[in-house]
Image 1 (tube, rainbow, N blue to C red):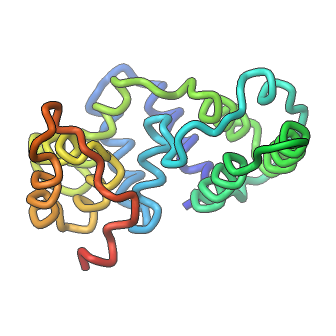
Image 2 (image 1 turned 90 degrees about the horizontal axis):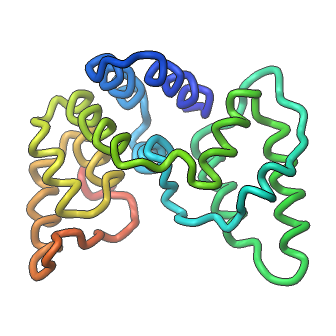
Length: 202
């Protein structure tokens, strides 16, 4: 899946005030997502990359002056790899190295993708209401009950892994392990291991 698919879906979601239409647009995107891309995609949709804080602030991101690409080419997996690489760029001279990497990556992005990347990297996309909307879309795409999907996300503390389990048809088998992981936690938000669930669920 390409990043442009995410930005185009985001435009559809932003253009309507009807929650049902927003949910449907997101669900259609999720239905087209490969299993290995589900968890990273969920992070991008809710503005919380699985890498966590990237370490590049507004000043660094706004300083990027890269011409936009005419055609989209950035894949979801490539974006995840780039964010990991950027996060790992630390130490003496890292500020300039980060700037160089950001400029090169942004040159591959279309204008809409550049706008999305800026907001994603600095955390502007992160909002609780969006997470709730994505949770509903996961349930719709997977054909699972909304309460079950929300419970899985709450108990595991990881919406991406809950989405992966739901969309590969293994949510009911995965939920007991998520529940066991939450035992003894007052807020029931203990995260499961960050590895992909897919191999063990097939």
